Image (tube, rainbow, N blue to C red):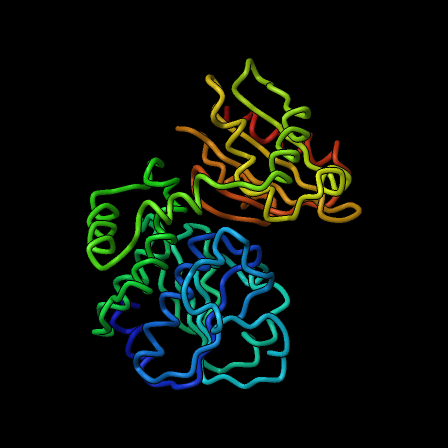
Length: 318
């Protein structure tokens, strides 16, 4: 199915819900808001339904009034669009909205996407889902104003590590250039998204670093984050974002893992790699997904068994 096919379906419906994945990141929030703003310009009724409250660093994004968090269970939508979401598990508690809607669209750039909607579009060469949404908005013939441009810039900049990761292409820079031309305040966005943090997160980072272990001759880094650590630091779930890069940034480390305690017997895992280890394959083996160099999953068990399972798999790939 082509993007033009997807756009043709979207044009047919007026009451539309847009869903980011659970624990949505900058690409998910930015893509959803950008598409929502564009569809509102076409006089569509749009609701962006989030699983969790948008993190502080993205609260400056425009038109947040589109976002709903609760009370959507009984609403009927003509169309539900899932963005940046690899499988139904990443839809989370909003699965009822998705499953009770006859017309569903899934737009993503993760190679592990399961094609779970009625209409699916996957572009694994896109650096971010924001790049795909940029194309959709152009096909819709909607003007990219400063609000849309800011949302898309955040989507693309965050998923490329501020244009540092290997998924950054000439197309990525061309799109970013166009977005800046249309009104993005690059300095302000960069300051808020990449150069600001809370004192609670700094405290959490300190505790996390104390758990750092380097294995396999320094090629593998493990960090653990417990609920007690979050409480002691006064930190929020969103403060865990980016901690996995602490291990990845160490010289000689190929793969970095953060194991985050979610509840008794359940751990969220973030994986990163630098060059040759495909952590997307690792995450997929444990029921998750993602990209070659950035992926995640959730594993049940105790901390030591989860750690050992990940270590054994990564050691094989190393």
